[in-house]
Amino acid sequence: MKIQESAENYLETILVLKKKNGVVRSIDIANDLGVSKPSVSVAMKNLRNGEYIEMDKEGYITLLDKGREIAEKIYERHTFLTDWLTSIGVDPTVAAEDACRIEHVISAETFSAMKKTLKTK
Image (cartoon, rainbow, N blue to C red; front, side, top):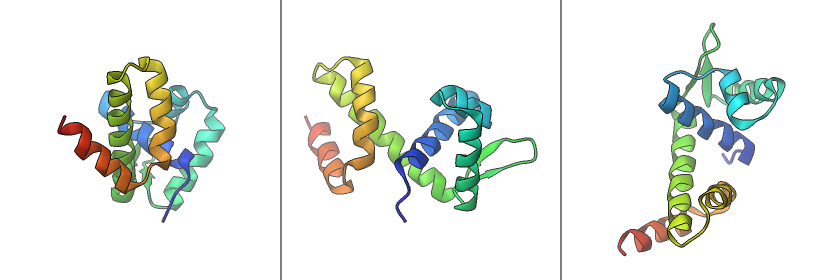
């Protein structure tokens, strides 16, 4: 099942914040993404309903297996594309912004071929 780009961004953000802080709550996501708390609340409800995340009674968010799979895929694409764009001379801020857009639309086949080709050079 294909999920929306915004949901992929939320899942990726949860993964990154968990790695950085050890725990994740909705307020952390809102602050990191620069979105409102109500927007995060709606997104977390949708992700819970889709069984991508779970939230405990204290509001701590954990990725479930299928949420983690998507988050790790998007994060890998983001870091790889950012690094590659930076290596060819793109400003790091622009590279990160462009990678964020590309990571959602690039096919698995194209990304795999890019990784294979660029890692052998």
